[in-house]
Length: 354
Image 1 (tube, one colour):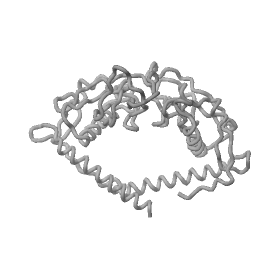
Image 2 (cartoon, one colour; image 1 turned 45 degrees about the vertical axis):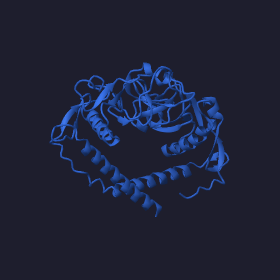
Image 3 (cartoon, helix red, strand yellow; image 1 turned 120 degrees about the horizontal axis):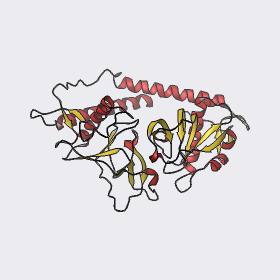
Image 4 (cartoon, helix red, strand yellow; image 1 turned 180 degrees about the vertical axis):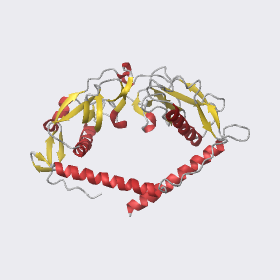
């Protein structure tokens, strides 16, 4: 990317651009599930801690996390939302387009994440006094047109790159043909599969992270479901790496991941412990089938997985002649997918380099 000339940029005080207030939603663990995203102290998923039955009091604004390992993380939200006490909302004092707010969120993120942390938390008063360097027409007037045009160029470049990647993958037309007519359904608790564990059911807001060594898995579909890093709790052994986690409800119902490090779980996240040795390729295959089943047959906030996990939830799997799971097929299929993706990425990178 061409280097940006910032010679004529100027520093602008954040408090001159925005009115700032702390979120007011309290104790997320006491709220009912709902449809309104609530922003909290998180780096992943744009800071969205979950979807709750609260009023959406903000729309099209920037938020900044003020706590946890994601302290300082800044995001623009182009939708209606609410905020808890671990984040602040920036309400612009003058008109700003969506692309300008996207630009400013990136600039704020760069400033705040470098300065603030769990030990040095951000706050509305501190945020008001911070300055960010912006393209400017004068010392008192940011160059809004430059920001708008810059973000448009970024958007066009990203769209072009995505189109290039899709082309490298064959335009979505080179799918592997699968005949599932001979596959059979298995319950997750069958002898060939998993021990179903209800998880540690911890509340992240009650955890400490003075010396975080344990992953905290919540109802999320990014970063393998890991929403924070917390201290190990005396007397509570974390689950081993290699287990699978599954979100039972909410917006990301059915999200299923292999955990790469020891972990605890939040409410409504179950743990699948393999009953036999199972390769990561096979686990990935199964996690995809679980996610597909969850999204196809169940509905967030209406008919979630809680009451189905140990009863009627089942997944389709390829089988051998004796009707047992065909582990070799699953392994080879996922290896083929991995190779195709690697080939496409290499092609994509070579095109970008040229």
